[in-house]
Structure formats: C-alpha cells, structure tokens
Image (cartoon, rainbow, N blue to C red):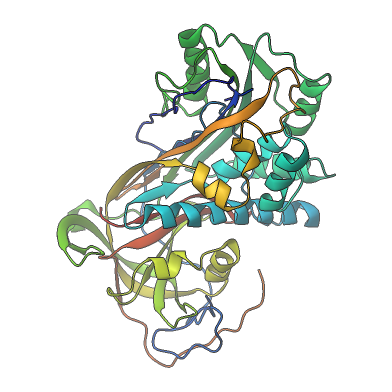
Length: 466
C-alpha cells in the first residue's frame, strides 16, 4: 500500500488451509550437478550426478495447498514467476525464466534469515508483485527493481510473455486447478499521472479499482472480498485489522489458488508414526506416509561434495509436480542445499532423473508462515523503494511522496495422502553403486511445487519439523 508521511502499522494477513496465495505490498506517502551418492564430484561446481533420466510415476491423489502472500501498506501482486515453456517464444521464455530465477533468489534470502524454522514461500507470487510494482516506479527506484529481476516490464514482449504464462498456468489441468488474478486498488481522490490507467491495463489486462481508504473497514472489506472470490474462499482475510488506514494510497494484489491431486495417492492404512530427526539432533514422532512405486529419482552433489536425494511426486496429469530433496547424511544441514539453489539447478534435477522402484516414506505436514520481505528485497539491491526520501513512484502519482511501508508474504500448504491444497547441458556422472531402495524423508527437506511445461515454481519451502 502507499501511505502518507506518518508511521504506519505492519499489515498482517491471515489465510486458510488449502492451496491459495496472495501477495501484497504497501506503499505509504512520506514527506550442484547430479551425482550418485559417494561418486566423486567432477568439478567445484554442482554437478548433477544423477543415476538416471526420465520422469516418475508418483503415488498420491487428492490434496490441498493454500498459500497467501502479502505486501502491506500497498499490496502488490501480479503473475510473474514463470520458466521456459514450449508454448512461449524465445523472448517470452527468457522473461519467464528470469522471473522464476528472481523468485528463487528471494526464497534463498528468506531461508537464510529463517535458519532452522519451517518456511513455505511462493516465488511466483513475489515475482508477480514486483513486476506490477515496476510500472509505478521511475528513476533509480525502478532501475534497482529491474536489475534484481533481470528484465524490464516496459520492454517489448515482456508483458505479453507474462500474460501468456498466466494463461498456460490456468489451462485445464485434469484434476488439478490453478487460478491467478491481479488487481490494483487506488485511493479514490489520489491524482494519478495522466495515462497511467490505460497504460496499466495495456500491460496487465486489469483495470484500476478506486476505493476510499478513509473508510478503513469498508476498503479492507472490498479488498478481502475480492481476494476471497479469487481464491475459491480459501483466503478470506488477507488484510487484517490495521493493515490499511487513512494514509493508505494504493494496494496491489495478486491472488493464487492451487488444488492438486497426486497421480497416485498414498494409502492411509500405510501411514504410521515414525521418528523425524530435527536439525538440533533431537527427534519427534510424526505420522509418515508410505508408498512403493516407480519414481523419477536422482542423486546430486553440492560443490562441497555433499550428496542429496531428489524425488519427483507428480500430480494427476504430470503437468505439475512436487520435488522433494534432502541431504543423504542426517549430519549435513539443509542449508548445504538451499544455499546453492537456483532455477537452473531445479531444471537440471528434472532433466537428470530416471524412473526407479523406490519405497518413499514422507511425513504428512501442514505449514503456515508469514515472511517479512523487506530484508530479502533490500539484500537483492532494492533499497530505494522503502525510503521515504529516495523512493520514486512518480509514474503513478506526483501528487504525494510515496514509498513502500511494508512487504509481507503469507503462505499455507497442506500435504497429505491424497495430495496438496495450495536447460543447460551439464556433465552427468553415473556411479556404479546401487541407489538405495528406500527414500526416507525423516530429516529436514526441501520441497518445490513446479508447473513443468513452463518450469514455473508456484511454491517452495523447507520442512525442519512436521
């Protein structure tokens, strides 16, 4: 949201328990490579020493995943995290990949700040928000955002590429469902730069909605109602009480909903309590699901020589997948993997997998986290937009000095027996050692929900304790 020259409170957001996401931001007015385990890494770079290639037949069915992203004081949102896809042209594919990579970079900074806490995050949501924000900024503020994201929203074919990605995501997904929508809510009497409304519509195909933020509760209700409708009722209270006030000038919102069913469900009869090994060495008994099937599987090593498992769980139709990754040795921290993560590495995972019979043991889990994005965004060089003195939002309005008051993302994900509600060439080394017959995720692990045709990462996170 955009607010005026007075202190403003952080806007919290609440969400429900399925697969939804919302991003918002507030502005205010202020005066390695694949390796099979134990194989020797070939270079200091991560080399996927996967044993194999291919896809997997996962085993899981219905499930829900819900997530909510919020940028406060001026909620921003837009559809922008996507990766390369055959349906996109070269330029569009490049933009999609850059947006996806940006979202993953933000995730890395979020995880570093979170340390050993559970995290669930939407790279797609944060990219959507920042892409929309680009259009309202000018000068150094805009340049910092563009450099961090790797593309300029005003360049030819960039906005069409993002719109095409959104269409690809929302195509019929068999038993899975994805929907995404963007909106911009502006203070009714804020004088906008001439031509901003048609310019915004040209890029994002959504109209500017005018509200009166002096009627605080009424404005909050209008925005929350819009979000609830576009997340199938999963997110009913994106803007908590106090999130907006009479100083709010603009709220940009992205709503993302995902409901996915496993291609093959886990049998509830095989779910039993097992010990989960936490990063501090202690253990906790949690319900763990079990499934024997042919999974797409690979082993990679980090630049430091730590081996880790990657296994793909496809959703119905295999357009969407959840990738699970964890260091092989319990003594190796999950940070050894998250510190090297980027969109290209995830691309390599998929390209170096082989279908192998495995017994997968995976904990049921439900996570909900709220992340303050201000630190991660500043670490990526986007500092001016938070400064009441340096922020330049004159492409939106030159009537008042605007700046971002707060940037938040709130996400919820639930994974159970039925499902979830919410390329470059690299040397591949194949080891002669047999891969383990069991893949037991009884230690901290990374999860990634990806739209495979476009390589868009919808959600990702780290589970430190179920």
